[in-house]
Image (cartoon, rainbow, N blue to C red; front, side, top):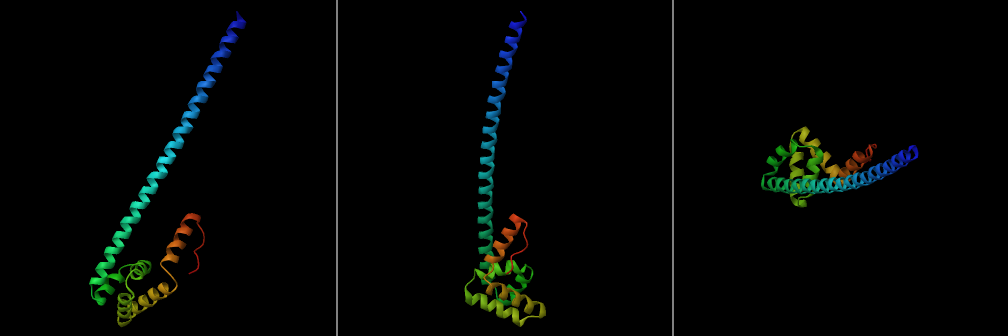
Length: 146
């Protein structure tokens, strides 16, 4: 009788083990599926963010182009140098030159800003700035020298 009970327990344990293993495999498959879904969602979200940013940048450029250079300077002074570089870099050179020229006509802060923006454009920014920021954000590294 005792041998039969051990045999039955052994069979029950084997069945339980197979059920646990099956459930484990199902959970791993579900986790993989969720991970792929999450990655797809994050990719879509990044693409939407990039498209919205691109549209907003183009709209801002259009507004700056429609303004007189002195009015454009007032708006650009409220933005960061990086934002100034991104906006001016995408404009026609003639328009960029007019705006940079207007910076030089302004007060000391405007002159300094114009010089900094021109310096960043001449270094090949904004691409280098954006790549450097992305690299640093991913790796936690020191800033790339511009």
